[in-house]
Structure formats: C-alpha cells, structure tokens
Image (cartoon, rainbow, N blue to C red; front, side, top):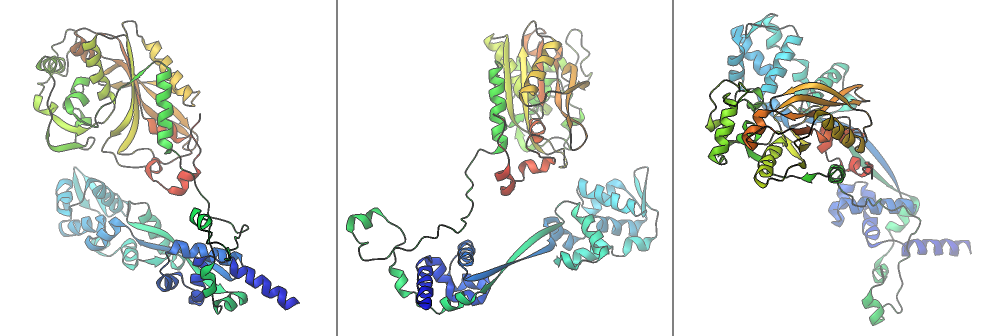
Length: 513
C-alpha cells in the first residue's frame, strides 16, 4: 500500500513536469548550464527557470557560487598596449630632465584629462615639479624608469579579487578611481546536483508525456481533440519570476510634472533645436566673443557647419550692442565679427530659446507674455558626481512693462515649492546678459552643502534694445533641472542619472503626483 502511494506521488510529479523540465532531466549529471545548453539547445534563461522548478519539486539541489573578477576596461585595454599616461609622460621626462608643458603633452599624445592625471600622479610621488610652465625632474630618474605597482597590476589582469595581495588592493583602488581602466565584475556560477529522486527520473521514459496537453486552446475545444487525453498538472505552489510592469522613465515623469506646473502658472512652452548658431546661443545674449565659455573646452562646436544669420537689421543691432554703440552702454569695446556668430554648436543652455522667443513676441506684439522651456543642453565638462556633459535645464521668461525683481523671486520660490523645495537660497551673482543676477541653491543632505542649481536675473538693455528697439523689463531664469530632481529619486551621483541600471530603475519611486 505504501509503495502504491509512493508510485502515485511520483506519477503526479511526472505529470507536473513541463516540456523544458523533461528536456533537461537527462542531462542533469552534466552539472553545468553551458553543457546543458549545448545538449538541449534551450537558452540559458529557460534552463535556469526550469532548474528552479525542478529544485522546488525536490529533483535537484542548486548551489550558487559568486566570484569577483577584475578585468581591463576600455581605457585599460588601450593603456595595456600604449602604457599608462604617467608612463608615457615619465619616458619623455626621463630623456630630457626638463620639458615644457605644451611639448610634453604634444609628444606624449595625451588628452587634457590624461595629461593632468599623469602630472598629478608624478607630483604625488615627488618625481617632478612645475616651474614657469616647465616640467622639471625633481626625484631620482630611476623612479621614472622603474615599473610602478599599478603597471605590474595591470599586466596581471584578469584576476580574482579574492587572490589579491595588500599592495595589489592598493593598486586596485588607485586604478578604480580612474575612468574605464578596470572593471570589477561579479560572476555567478550555478552548480547542479540531482537528488536521489531526480536520479530515478533521469532514467524514466517520458515518451508518453509528449501527448499531454499543456494548455486549452479554442481549437482544442472546437474540435474536441482533448477527449481521452491527459492535461499536465499545474504547480501552483512554485514561485514564479517577478514581472515588472512598464512605467515612464523617471526623468520623463519629473519633466512632465514640471511642464504641468509651469502651464498651471500661466506659462506657454517654447521649443527649439539642440544644434544652434553662436549668434543665438551667445551673441544675441550679449556674451562677448572672447568670453571663456565660447572656447572649445566649454562648448561642443560642430565642425564644417556655418549657420545662416537672421535679417541684417537685427544682426547690425547685436553688433552695435557688442561694440558699445547703444546709448548708455560701453559694450565690450572690441570689433564684433560676423564669422564667429555663424559657428554652429550644441546649445549650452536653453536661454537661446528665450532670446529667439523674444524676437517672435516683438514681431507679434503679444506682450505681456510668459514662456518656459525644459530640455537638454550640452557642455564640454568632465563628468563627476555633480557635473555632466549632457543635462536638462528649465528656462523661463516674463515680458512685462511692469515686471520687477521681487516678482522674479516670487516665481522662483513658487516653482521650487511645487517641486518639493520649501527652502532655497538666493545669492547675488554675475551673468553677461542679466543685471541684477542671482544664483539659486538648495541644501543637499548627503553632500552636506549647498548645491548650485542655476542662474536667474533681469535681461540687460544690451539684450532687449536690439530686439525691441527699447528696453523692456524681462525676468529670466535657467536652473539645472537634473539637480532639482536628484534628491527626490535618492540619486547622489550625477553619473547615475543616465546609468540605466535596470534594477535601480525598477525600484525607483514614482514622482510626486
């Protein structure tokens, strides 16, 4: 009787096995997913899922092994071939003892960031000094020639983290703080051990199970083909894979909310292209043509592209503002060049949309008017915890004969209050195109300091007179939007804004409704 009961239990178990479970059963003794994949042709995800079901049914025991592996990153592969930046710079200094900064960078073929990192590394080891724009050997030449611990460590990769010596741990920390030199990957392997019951079923003949019905379909019901056949037993107790429902990307959630907020405050939206002329991005905003922000290190210029400027009358008015030919202004006291204004770039701020919109407002005679924008901007900045080369900015203008600075503060406080910031800090600042100017800060609880969000102010006469023919008070602001939403989503590193870690994205809370 007992044997009969056991046989019935085994038969029920057999009837509950899915086609994939039956397919991998004969190969459980391989104990390796890759080999099961080769034998069955099933993808690894299906194999792992079937193994979990078999484990729940007591047919296999699964053991997960974790191993941390250190491998060369993208830059690491390059440096393994060419040498670390400090090695390439060391070789030059070792030959010459003294070399100018410009000559050293040119000869070493290092970009700005690599060159700075190389100098910093050698100075930290007291091997060089910088005197009057020259790199001077200050330590022993042997210190430059001998391979460093970091170089030896790179040559030894790939390695298991668990096998590192203390000095190698030190090198790991050094190299891990630098961009893409090494990658630390956690590798999981699954070991498979059939149970006694599993070994019995490995030998079982499952040919009759092929006729079992997996699911009821309209055709089965219509034709009656299910008569006389067995349905597979469904296991309703085994855990199933987690299903993550789709949701809007978290930045888009916040963007939609911010746009709704501006619209509720009576603003209209302004939009425009991301590639724009220097005329609209800089010149129309009274930014001098020799201002540092227009240099290559701050701006992404598009090579071999020349923009078409607006009508000659407006171009001449902007030229007059720069050259100090507007009443009451000295301008920048230089000769304005039209060819510089024709350069094409990726917009560095959304304020270029404001100045273009002001022109349309003047043409349509529609002021008083209120407009906002929210979109991507680009600046050639080194990526770190608080900066990125791509970011979102929200922009706004209020055009009104009676507009004043107190109203500007009111708009900013109301917007930030709706975005969840009851308290902001406003301090005086400077921008070429606004006077008075201010900076908006929020206190960051993780960094334990005030974090700058962006600027605001009232457009200068040099901006408004060329557009309107007279000065009209215009309130303007352009805080960084990404920094506004980082605290809400518990993001403390700007680089995580666009990291696209699927697990983090799934666990992110929904933006406030």
